[in-house]
Amino acid sequence: MTDPWSNLDERAANAARLLAVDAVEAAQSGHPGAAISLAPVAHLLFQRTMRHDPRDPDWVGRDRFVLSCGHASMLLYAQLYLSGYDLEIDDLAAFRRLHSRTPGHPERGVTAGVDASTGPLGQGIAMAVGMAMAFKHQRAVYDPNAAVGESPFDRRVWVIASDGDLQEGASYEAGALAGRQQLDNLTVIYDDNGIQIEGSTSLAWDEDVPARFSAQRWRVSVVGRADSGDVDVVGVDRAIAAADGDPRPHLIVLKSEIAWPAPTARGTAGAHSGALGADEVRRLREVTGGPATPFEVEADVLGYTRRAIGRGQSLHASWNDAMERWQRENPDLAEQWRAAQARELPAGLAAAMPTFEVGSQLATRDASAKVIQALAAQIPELMGGSADLAEANKTLIAASASFLPEGDGRLGRNIHWGVRELGMTAALNGMLLAGGVRAFAATFLVFSDFQRPAVRLAALMNLPAIYVWTHDSVAVGPGGP
Image (cartoon, helix red, strand yellow):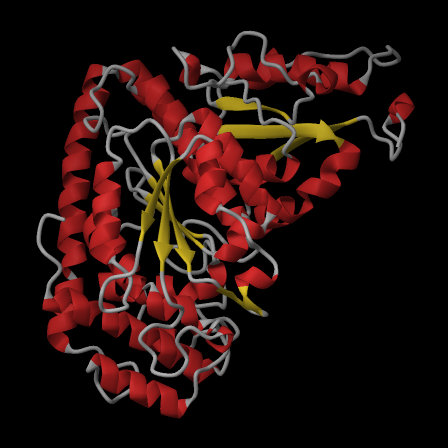
């Protein structure tokens, strides 16, 4: 941490806490617990850690943030407002109301600064894995020789996740994929508070989470609570700094008390969801020393957090300079990058497509394979793969290698998703959210049932996802049930 955690940082975190409870109180619904206890961590990320520009939420060079536990949406909305994104106090006051810009779960395209629609637990982590994969591929294709941290293509993905995220199967699939791909540009902060809706997590879960992620080849850091009982935000910052240079994705297990420092709600399952009540909110204001009026942020606190605007514009300007230098030195790649970002198709693409004689006999997956080869030859940003079924689905791009972390593998366009249909499809969403790639995922049609939750999110986010489904049969042909 360049500057020590100050009184203004503490007050800013408390302001975010109060904005969260005020919004939930006004809506009489929502999930205040994590938004209260994790406010200092979100403040650290948005004010000191992430590269982002509140005045340009679509800046391609920014880091990405995924609130995998989307139910804690006020944790994100409070930071977007305090940092200076296009969000007003009236938007926070309209939390969870129809047509508001602050829906109950973050929705891409509704709220400026939301990088992914989250809510179905586990999928946020998986989308973050896909984002990190896309960034690794682009770094290798466009700027492979630059030193670490010196390229405009060096971008990171930050995630805040809950116990519910880690209980979902999607997180197991995504975690294994991230470990194999050595995604050192991915950091997941896991809120280990021991509470879920039905009570203690021990009612349903008794897993050694650090051991699980270590087995999946992640770096794991465990950060205990501060002496005050609050989250140890300085410990989180130190854990982030200590991971620099480690080739593995990073899980930070953050010990916390849900809803801390709410006087009676903290540490309870009731704080997970639902309004705390006027008396508890009043007492929380007293504990934090915040304004007595709902949705009020003291001027010096708001001025302090709005420094994120200047910081973001400075980072953005430096990135623009680096990108302009890169473009001058790499004009052909720069044109390829521009076309990929704009999703432009090359001239003559239709003429390059294979044709099939009327009346001829050819399995549709064989025809699909011919089309994939033709598309891949014309569209360099096309990449994808199958859930361990490339031979059967006929999806292998013959002219390209495998996408892997070893050697020049990051250049590869054939992704080995493994037998992970849900994780594959959610990660595909993340790749598309990263931008600059066209990606596909393939399996047998019958296994689309495993993919469906992520297909639904792709539709809700209007993502140009490509699915290859072969063997159109509930019995998978002669292969049995």
